[in-house]
Length: 115
Length: 113
Image 1 (cartoon, rainbow over the protein chains, first blue to last red):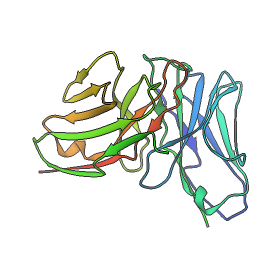
Image 2: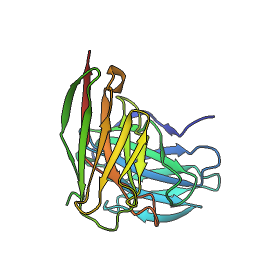
Image 3: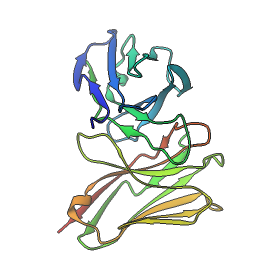
Image 4: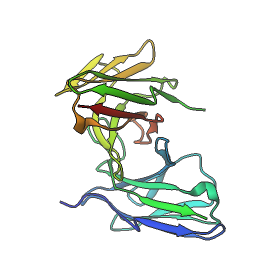
């Protein structure tokens, strides 16, 4: 079975531009979460979507937005890029919204470099 | 404000030795404590997880020890192998409500032959 797939794997943007990152969850998973991982740091929670509704938002500015589609895939959008947005953006899917028996399955990430 | 503090930042262990990584948390609402393993160029993968109603959980060579009163938990890797060389992250969440994980900063483990 395919795991969590993300695209693109690498991209370079300049300050002020916009970026869209895409994620396809594991088949049957209804929840998608987005995390930002700056080099040398742990992942930081950005959003969680479940059944196409936003169910959690981390401490990120409004320049960050996301959505989940009817097929449960998801997009993360970042506007007005700053140098500090350079990071690995991880998508994770889970079967459920929450609970102790499930787990998050992470993709390999999209590496964004802002020049 | 860092809610999960992880130490050490890096760790070098000889093959066959025990690797120990420690974490401390502040938010008493946390009720789910997973450990993730990340290899270069890959996303984190769940290694083992524990709930605060147990003090220890063991899966193969990996053991989590949990001290609720001290708000600390640790990962022990027994018989460490070169293939265990990776970055390890502790994390915490209020799993009853969401999978919003708060991660530590990570420990880079190197197991030398």
